[in-house]
Amino acid sequence: QVQLVESGGGLVQFGGSLRLSCAASGGTFSTYAMGWFRQAPGKEREIVASLSRRGGRQYYAESAKGRFAISRDNVKNTVYLQMNSLKPEDTGVYYCAADSRWDESLITIGNGVDYWGKGTLVTVSS
Image (cartoon, rainbow, N blue to C red; front, side, top):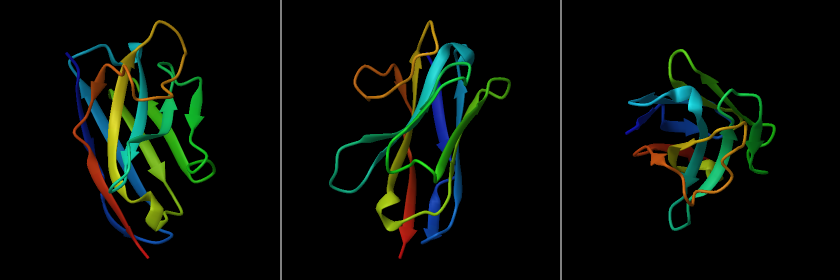
């Protein structure tokens, strides 16, 4: 059983930056593809970015391209999401996700993901 704990959320002004962290425990971190999802008020959860288990492949939603960067540290068992140039539409609860993989494939949808964190709230004021 893998536990995922997100941190780093908070209130930030338009154009600001935040760095989210997700610490994993209870499993072999390097065997999991990792992803960040967000759920805005009144909307469905959507993927923001994901990273293959060794970090060799990345995926970004169109809304995140050029502004967000996902990375992982397989020694610290942590995945990060650096978010720059934040906009009010980035507001939402950000969830960390882990999915067991045998290869460098990516998480691109939420269905079937093995583990989820409880989320961290990001609020971007205009």
